Length: 512
Image 1 (cartoon, helix red, strand yellow):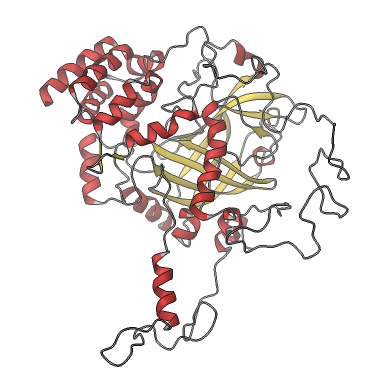
Image 2 (cartoon, helix red, strand yellow; image 1 turned 60 degrees about the horizontal axis):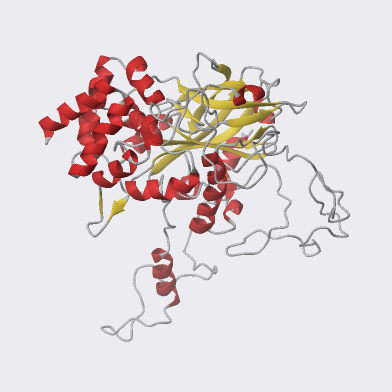
């Protein structure tokens, strides 16, 4: 019996071809090897249709790469739920005993498609679950935090990490100039410059949803949650020098490692856990729980077991099933929702829009992006539409036909003057601190500070060896910065921890 995961992998695959080749319209090809010319030494003719089509299609084989997270790889498998969390969420995929087919894409943030995947970087950890209620995506990283708390800063951040200016080179000065002028980045930069910045393989790292999400149970009671994915393979990391050495030896080291592990039957597994915060406690927790630059202490909110996922199938075609896998944090299902996390809300727009740009407005019709559940939508037409509605299906709502409407609609009218009340399908927040449209900073909580958790990470989590490596990695990454930015870097790390700032100053003085 074919499993749901195998059906997903097989979707869109054509039968194994045999015999003579054809043109794309199905007509036979005379030769794949010799083009038509005007005489033995003459020019090619414009109406050598197969030559023109073959070259034109070749020129268009690549879609635009993702701006961040361009270099990536992935696999498929299943999510297994082993514990009962139904008191917190009604989402079908999280009910006890449920097995859900899934896909994973691992990536780096700053590099291009051809860049080494062992460069020091935050590593993307993005999951898709093909559930009974549609596709649910958790688009996270191998760190529990991020550099920013407001999506409006995201283009500036990425620009500072990418190639700049007339040289077309990445700039340490631009990176540190942005980071030191954006103090909220301190917690994530501390993670980045620590061991987590250079995981040895995708299999030997933890993953995080990073954002705060919401779960809603069958009674409509909400809680705030954070996802943690704990590798059973154990943590393995490169040193700075080892990561650079491997980048020169094999730019695809992590991609190759995951593929080969699955091929030999060494299937990687991650335990799925969550932190759960009662809804009302978000108002009084010691720092804003929706701030992506912050974590929740596991002493305050311990990890709760949910289940595990296993990656046991490689893609059958990398381009079709990994490069065109269009992950999107706006892909939600009943029982899960967003939160007032501004980065999350910005990503819920930006990710889908990036896919519309890369692979067209009908990217969800690609086999790897189709949900298991049938789609019933009024969206239609557009470039590369290869699904279409029946001839008698209406293209507007409301209508006199049986196509239907939303589950709150009456299906007969446009609901003019009718209020549906709170939009509980996204997030329930009865006190959003005012209903006026404002541009306001995050609401400060008692212990909020941009550097406090970075300092805790350094002083209370890292041992002496990790601290030494952190200092070495920071000062390695400072090579090429200007004198003015150098002074800001020392101030930045002194704000994290006075001793750390002094050690960075002394170590960089040796390397200059």
